[in-house]
Image (cartoon, rainbow, N blue to C red; front, side, top):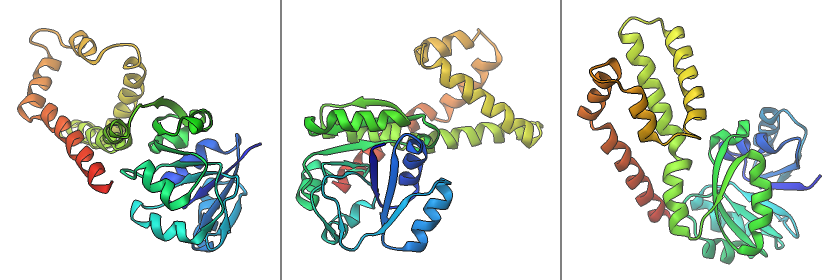
Length: 253
């Protein structure tokens, strides 16, 4: 099996590694061996562990999972030229990654935490010579979409990368609403999970507007609840959330 080298051992790296284990050999590079051992324990699979100081990336396929602010510091501790560098760093341009790490090819990507269960929506862009390899690897953790520019991936980062947090807020709020009306917490959570599971399948086939109209009968319960969402500016808030997250991605770059 091909070996994938993770530089960094945070939550996103762990989520991707969980989705890839069994399909690729995995090695992880970090600054602290105890943290690397913790990563291995959470992954529940034996992996190669290396301290970052003087690690040689020559001809390796690397997934870069460090904090954007640490790019320069990390790059100075590594040696060699990776054959492919796949970055999951928000707002970090291809040009900066090329200058810092000098790999043969760079691809920017933005998976989300659903990678751990093979259900990420991952957007990518970068060097065309790295496209096939990056798509092959990241298709193992869910759906992929190659975009034509870095501006587009910054926008997609605001949607698919940050989106699980937004949906988690909505899921929690809906369950809280049911509890407020008298449904037991465990029943509200079970109902909410079933809702999201079914909705995830429906939205693959049905446009959101059509789906909404199909549920909302005149003068019915859905119409009453939907009206409350509009009064609360939920639609505008979602649009603004994408705008603010996109602005932050631009600031990071």
